[in-house]
View (tube, rainbow, N blue to C red):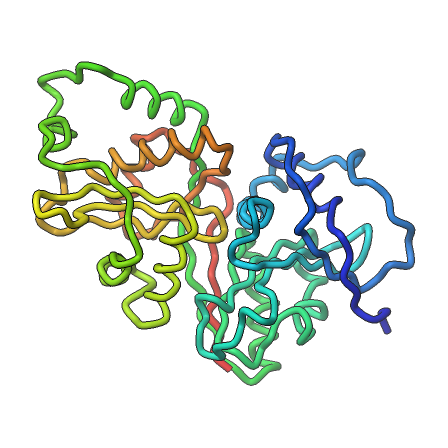
Length: 328
């Protein structure tokens, strides 16, 4: 049997995240780590070597921890199975945030495991994942599928996997965004952003009253709980939109608690005018200045957004974006 679960300051987790994304200067004052095994002494992970492949599959976890380090607005915490040589990391909300048993948008877990075949016992603990709730698990590791399906069967529930393509903004993409947006005189033959250049549309940001509009067009939304989640993201994280002549949003891009660029949408009347492309460049330029990790997922059937990612020189990751929705 393992020792009782304890909470511990998680500086080493942040050191690892810094190595993955080559970012420095992050504070660690608000990171908590749940540890199952502390038989070994505390030691730094500075000497640990991580491969590029490992860095890619930890992207979602890093994006979430980045937000935790920016004031932790979604009140999340990090958990590991043992210390210091952990195998599995889970990012999840604090218990007081998970009051709605049916709200899988809030009851969301990000998981990374060095060896997915050895993480089932840890993920099955009620202190780690509350399997009595409607929940969703997100990971860039498709290899977790068998473990999660096994746990769902043991918990007598149902689980559905959604798998999408994962893209990361490249350095070339960042330079393209700066070049395009800093251009004083766009080419008269370039009609891609014609309506914006002619001041028909106005760059702005969403306010909470726009949550219903975003919710209507979000693939994973369309219900009361998703609207509350969208409202929280609008209030908490950077977002951009274009306002039409009536002063209402016609196109928008948001960010969620994992640091992912998502929930983009355009009103049907304004589609095929390059508005999402324009806003994506705006978003890329702004978030790059703030030091945010930048990545997004695209449905395999959404060829328009895949073409956009290609045109923006985003890098297609060798791993996938995975989400498992569990119903007890």
